[in-house]
Structures are given as C-alpha cells and as structure tokens.
Image: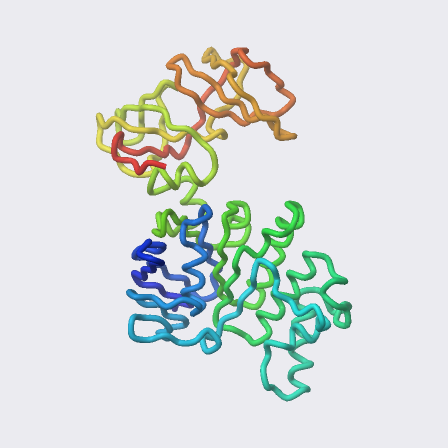
Length: 353
C-alpha cells in the first residue's frame, strides 16, 4: 500500500529552541493517523510543517509521493492538495452553509459546484441546512460544515488540528465516531492532532505519541496500550503503576503480587530485574482471595470506583471495581492479579516519564 504521507527525519527550531527532532513517520493511503501528546510536545508544529505553513531546515515531507518540503524545496500550502479542519472551525459568518462549503472548491462550472456542495451536505448530514448561517447551527453542526468544506476540493490528505476541543464530552465522542465513518466511507487519508487519548483511540488507525518534539512510538492503539516501547508511553497511555519484579522464565516474573505468568511485551533475560506495569484492569476484586491490599485512595467514576491499593510490600497498585463495592479508606480488600499481557522494562533501562 502506497503512502499518503511520508516524513523522513524532519527537525524544526524557533529561536534556537528545538521543537521537532528527527521526526519520521509513514501514513498509508486510506488510513487515519494521529499525533498525540501534551501541550508543547511539537505536534501542532509538525502539522504546520506538513501543511506548508512552516519551512523545514532538514529532512523531507512527501504527500502522495510528491516532495513538498525539504531544505531546497517548499511547495506553498495552496498547492499541496490538502484539506484543513481547524480548532475554531474558521467558518465565514456572513456566508450560508452552502457558500461556506463552496468557497474552497475553486473555479469549477457552477453546475459542478452545486453538485459537489450537495454531495458534501449529504455526506455530513446537513442537506436541510444549506441556507442557514453558521450562528444558526450547533457546535457539532459547525464542525461538520468545516469538514465538508475541507473535503469539497477532494484533497489528497486531510489535516485536523484539535478539531473537537471546543465541544462538550458527549458530543465530542459521538462526533469522533461520525467523522471517522465519513472519512472511511470516502477512503480519504487523514492526520489528526490532539492531546485527548479518547479522541485518538476513537478515530485513528495508527497513533504517534510525541514527547519533546520526538516520536516515542508510532503504532496501533492496542500496541501502545499493551506493548509500549518506553515507560513514557506506558505512563501516558491509559493508567497504571510500576511494581518491582524479577524475571524467572521466558513468560514468568516474580512480583509482590505473586508470580505473574503471560506473554511479555518485550523479551527479558532470565534473572533480569524488571519494572512491571500493572493496569487497573489487571487487578480483580475478589473477596474470597487470601491476598489482601489496603485502600488508601478512591475515585468515584459512576459505574466504577478507581481504588489505589497498598500491598504488603508498601508498593501501590490501581484497581477498577464496580461501584457496588464501596469500600472505605483503610479497609483491606481481597484482590488477585489477572495479567495476560505483561508489560515490563528491564530495571534502570526504562525511559523516565
């Protein structure tokens, strides 16, 4: 499968401060990618470089196989065949919805423009709102208009910059799924930038976790969660804590939770001291278990309670338990580990988060 976007070792600095460092990634045609990270990690700067709003002093960027950025070449944004969806939608308030969508199409015959606008309105489910103005629509509907306008010129690649951050949580999650379905239906390649893991997981086929301008891991959501390549990724994606362990065989590690047996995320030599990541879903609440842990903190989450539990070793683990089991601080409860994918790092070798 050919690449919609190929980035090879690009770097970018502002006032001698490195913002992007040797960033490389490959996004296949028809795939939705995501750059995920905290504020200031360089993800938006990377998107601006791809869009052509920033030049790059090293490395190369190719869109659909065409070189668009390098030290000696810079194709203007308007010539890159890109669609852009911004955080603030950037709709024209004085234009109707259909005219907003038509704005980006260019100099096509009027009949073709009307047909294309009609197709876009139908695609995003706003065919009955063509004559309305942006202020007459909800935030979710405005975001759909912005998406339709970006898709109208039939771009090679769609870029989305924190597109759902202005929406409430329930609408954000629903729109993530809707937008993914729309993009998949038409087979367009896209790259999303966000700090929100739920958005990344809901939309993207492949996700890049960024840290201080570098790409820690470019992988599927499953692998980021179950096979993180660094402690930073393990800490950033999902929740969990590290406990000390000692590898005793190719699929066993001895910990304060007992012997854990399962598939290692990465091979570790026998006898190796290891830091083992324990997720909340790895700890099962079991009143009949002889293994007890003390409740030291609790966070109510509606259907569940996230308990922080102290083991006999004084190490802590997290457990996500049905809120029907409402234990008090200081109470000892029965638990048992159920770990199939054992995420471990050789002690002293993990990247600090």
